Length: 122
Image (tube, rainbow, N blue to C red; front, side, top):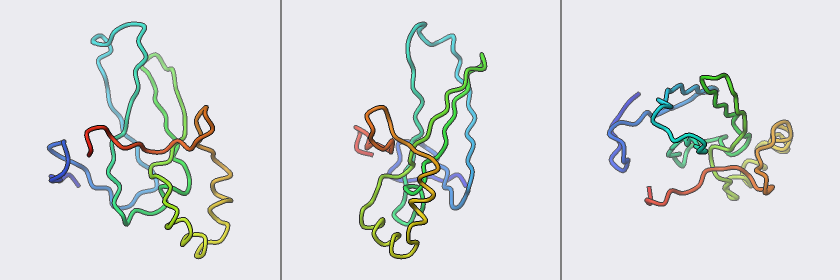
């Protein structure tokens, strides 16, 4: 559902309650972009404290250009929370390790690819 979130810089925000798949499609007029310049796409999310599972297994990401070039990657949608991790291990045992071993989300530096805080404090 679309709603107005008081601490958001956007006029409308979507609240996602439960899902196992989310596809976002968009178009960019590439004529306005500078040639021979690298661009990046960011997904801005606010994860509530009650969110579950976003730090267990990385999400698959994919960006496709009009020319058909596809860039696939993986990233965690939530930062690792050690206290939550301890509780999950008590409840779920080694299920997390088995799931995570099927998909890795690490960058070239060997660190987890996970969300970063924004510079504007939001």
